[in-house]
Length: 148
Image (cartoon, rainbow, N blue to C red):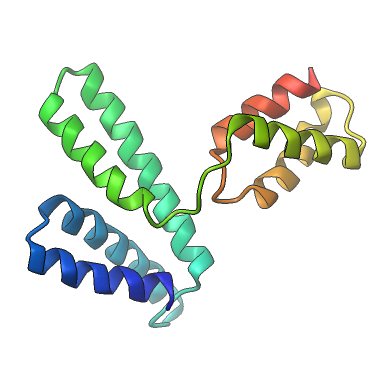
């Protein structure tokens, strides 16, 4: 079963169970997926594209929750965090910082990168290899730290 089919089934279950936050989160994913599919005139998109969309929505929810926290809006912050929890379920398990560091070390060693000027080359490989399993901000921070 594809992720898109899983989300459609979970939308039905959330509607029956009257889970408002889960339903809102899943509908946002479905909307974004349908928008992406309509660009090419297809009905479905690959799981890789769906994961990229969910990752983007998770990042948006985190950023929004942070803004609401800074503005002292606990109610809106909690809504965003609740929806975030439902979206993260569909993402692959995130690697720890130490695991990401090991992979980046290997990439730097294999590509023979030695200075910060090689950061772009390392980031391209690292982003592709760690896609969906690590935050881009963490990857960039670690690459910069190691190449110093």
